[in-house]
Amino acid sequence: MNAEFRLPDLGEGLTEAEVVQWLVSPGDPVALNQTLAEVETAKAVVELPSPYEGTVTVLHADAGETVAVGAPLIAFDVAGDDAASTEAPDASSATAPDGAQPNLVGYGAAPAAAGRPARRLRRTAPTLAGDTAVLEAAPHDASPSVEPPTPLPTERPRSTPPVRAYAKRLGVDLEMLAAVVGDRVIRRDDVDAFLNGGAGGVAIDAPAPSASRPAPAVPRDTAPREVRIPIRGVRKHTAAAMVQSAFTAPHVTVFHTVDVTATMELIASLKDDRALASHRIGPLAVIATVVCRALPRTPGLNARWDEEAGEIVQYSYVDLGIAAATDRGLIVPNIRDAGDLGLAAMSDAIRELAETARAGKTSPSELLGGTFSISNIGVFGVDAGTPILPPGQSGILAVGAVRRQPWEYRGEIALRQVMTLSLSFDHRLVDGAEGARFLKDVADVLEEPGRALLLS
Image 1 (cartoon, rainbow, N blue to C red):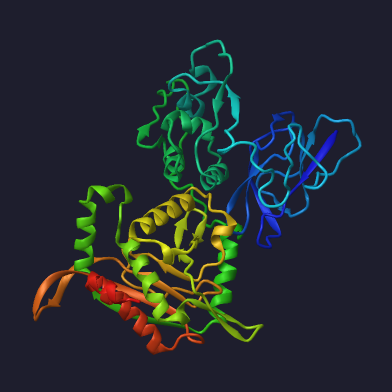
Image 2: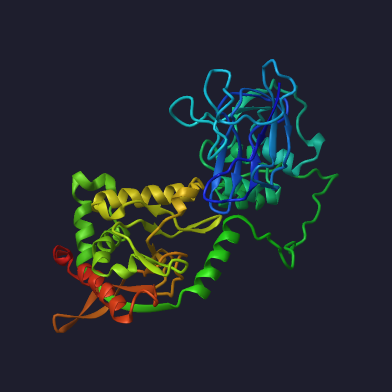
């Protein structure tokens, strides 16, 4: 029978998604739960698994096209008796060939087995050594005459969705690039290097031009005078959220510069502890842990303003947002119940959060519900800033770079490690004195880590 899969509700009220890339084509056989496509919502890139086992007949949208929730996305030819059926099944009436029940809300079908679906193998013709250069720079008669090899199944190039979209926009074939960089994840700078004649530090040697056919001259400046980039996906969502926050909540920012030498010495000693070596504890993990301990002393910073109900909602837990800069823009995924984590567990959670964000695999649910956020601007060498509150939150702490500089220490001038903390808060919920007290609580522990015992 013919079956149609419509774009499911990906959660949290999202109404549309952009098709980043298809992983199947018309005529391809697909298995239940096999990944069909990667789609980008306003919050994350999501893999859509197949709710059917059958053969793809129609792709209703092209890569780069935006599809509304509920609109037809893909059609299948599924083995069955009812040839007139064209609608996607619902969870109450349809079952897959192996008895599993498809789920069209959220992320598609329920997994049939543990683990992620395997990437589909593509049938491509392998190239000879140096063929990438021949294809790019040489005329057809410059390469030796060889019989075309038998196509072999190969795995699609390893890269993240933002890099694939970037390569597609620039017209770079990732399969050719994968032949150069080897069996590792292709990065954005690999795409740039490929366009400039190399990839991943490996030069691409083109054959010398024939004397009778000189190489064409390349214009020295081929860059366009302006570039127009569509506003969509994460960038569109972030812009709307930041404008809403800036013009809804009255922002106030306070700064405090603190001597963190003792904290940096503590971190260095923890790195020497074999029991903690695998956790890779850094300054951000320490600060996040201290913030979670200090928030109960200033409950207004772990709260939200409910305009409709006319109430201030204070939380007894901390869902800690960590701002992450990705190729797709700034996102703020959350560590659930961060206040219950110790230092080692906090470090692991932050590392996992960052790796997931960089890979473009952060789910929509991980981007919602934060109660307080931290932005580590120090990784960019920045000392201080005025961060904008994530919508629905009343506080965000920006962490500056750690710098060695002259500082008064025990009545003398010494070279110390110093950091600036910047706290923005919603002045409707938090008075200036409360914001200053919270910042002082955090700074005191960073200056003397033993003072964490006094936070209760």
